[in-house]
Amino acid sequence: MNHIIEEIKEEEVTDKRPLLFGLGFGILFGFLLHKGGATKYDVIVGQLLLTDFTVLQIMLSAVVTGMIGIYFMKSMGWIQLSLKKGSVGKNVLGALIFGVGFAILGYCPGTIAGAIGNGYLDAIVGGLAGIVLGTWIFAVMYPQLKDGILKKGDFGDITLPRLLKVNDWVVVVPVVVLIVLFLFWIESAY
Image (cartoon, rainbow, N blue to C red):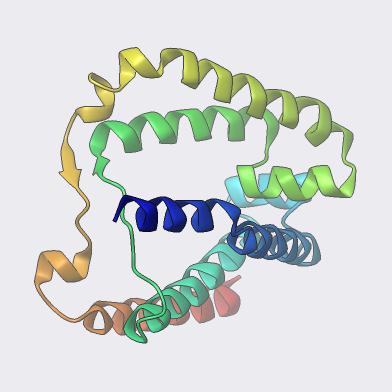
């Protein structure tokens, strides 16, 4: 029995396809961010000033596409969701780190990767340094944070369908419809 388990673990480690798929989709996502204009500083600042909704439109389109794709693959039995536990503390701390980086440099993690790919000097120097420094600071502070603020307001690995005790599609379809209507409204209003 142990031999079979070791063989499975070895097979999982040597299977690099998920990493290659991730890399491929990451490159495609970065390319699409660039084509959509979301790697430009002026577009990001326009979003923050509520004068340019390009980034919001791209991200909401990605949410709709991802939501439909993930729940379709789940319903077909192709994937299983492995949810991470969440908490209010994790969301607040993550939002603060994200917000500080966003306010200082004008890029979010996805757009900064795209901007680095475009060769933008501010993203390469400030963004890459910020990502490395921020990751290092969080890693150093993690032992103190994990039993403190990160546990505050723990809500587990709950999803809306689980909370409402309904089929996934009962939540996915209305959310997709609302997002699509909101996207049409943004397009017509601005």
